[in-house]
Image: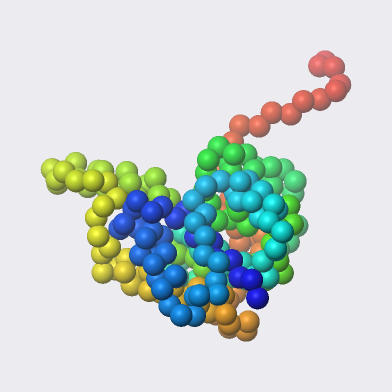
Length: 212
């Protein structure tokens, strides 16, 4: 079975971030991971969808790993199985708009991939409830911490904290189950009603009728 594991928001230069090098190493080192196709997904959903569309061999299962705010306690790891649902075309368009502006978000990738039909029936997510909403917040927080402490160093070069190391270990274990266990009871259904909302944007509509 061809299983793709995509780390959504993976950044190789942020060593202290749980979705960084330590997680990639943890997913490529174990013997059970040898058959998995582990990929960096640190670019826009549109490009990722186009790449999947262009490949002759379609995956039998996809596991997406990322930081998502579901209102859970900080650092909670959860797994969900995509159950779909109907989304208003305008709601899909909002996520496409967000994607082309450079926003990297797991829910946007799920919705856009479903819209273009690139996902197999087995699409699962492994989600980290991060206190930081995205990698930009993490970098800004690190810069602010350095400013307040008066320290000087390379942004992103700090080592993993003990808490983040535990997050990495839990993510790796959750991916193992999501990728290899067909009946993992911890995987809860994920529907369109549970998705985080897209950011509000200014919208314009054009009509054929003349203005009064």
